[in-house]
Image (cartoon, rainbow, N blue to C red; front, top):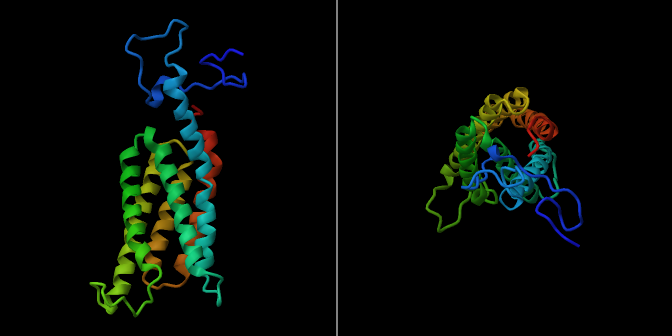
Length: 225
């Protein structure tokens, strides 16, 4: 059995990404058979983009879990575990979204929004299991400042989500309405950190709608490389 650079080991044809996706172009120009790039330089890009499209489905799942937490249902099963799973899924999906926008004109805005969102999530993570009115004895933080710190971390994450929504809206790669929904969700979630009860749930619903739209159209409107 012979394996060429245009076939996999099973004999199936191998999709090759075009040169504009960012893979290095050979210094000698075109290859003898007319292809711009050999498979060894470009096939990994197609695999990464395929993973990113699939990872976008983690955003609606995270929004459902977050919305369940905002309902205030008594005796919820493991709210801390549900919150951590929701945060993990949201992080995976936002990294995938920023990766898909890396080839658009709003890549800098998407990267900035991703970094700000991750900063807010990292700040919230050690505070997730702390009671509102109590802090560890060795922590350099007064008990009364804990709600302000949680609120500030939530606003920071919402700001990053707002920038990501703006990047989606201006990218012209997916439906601009999904970017608008993502920005509205960021505003509702950020305002919900001040204790306005319906807003976190509204933000979760808007995030669910935006996530479903991005996951559904991401693999259809973007060029398949």
